Image 1 (cartoon, chains in turn green, red):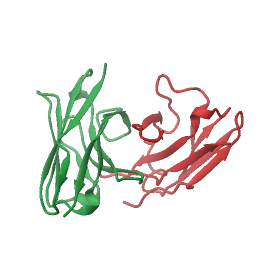
Image 2 (image 1 turned 120 degrees about the vertical axis):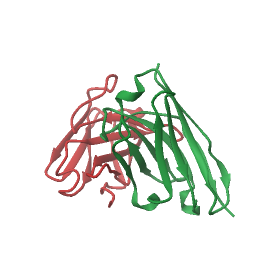
Image 3 (image 1 turned 30 degrees about the vertical axis):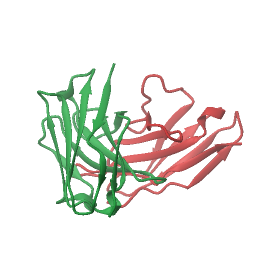
Length: 120
Length: 110
């Protein structure tokens, strides 16, 4: 069974940092691109960042460029999102998602999400 | 990285068909075959319904279909059922390793 389990969310002050993790099981991790997608309370979905199977291709939504860093450890089957200089508008439920292929295409399987709250 | 444009709401009676549009540009929907659709029930995780414009993942009912004409993608739900009431989001690859979503459409089954 494919499983994506996010962790690392929490409540932090503006300007602080958090590191999200996504533990993956049930499929060959290094065959697929992976993504982080977020959803602010009561709002729509927003793609945050994606990383190809071999980490050679990485993308970010403009609003997080220079502040967030996506990475993956194919040996440990983990996806990460290092978030720094957090802003109030980063408050959202962050989902880890498996792509349908090795590069950015679609979000086939989703985790349950981990909540990030940025508040003073 | 402008969002794709979806109507905020759509509705239909049980058994009817409803089509939700997703308007993009020549830099996303009009240029790549990586258009997908997601269903999200309140408080639940999004579910992939259509990918690569027209493909259905295993387990998605045949009454869900996708299409594209130029810079506009569409999701059609035929034979509406009560459980189809949900929010629907489109997304597209937009080049440079970026993916964009539409704002979402709330589908109501009357």
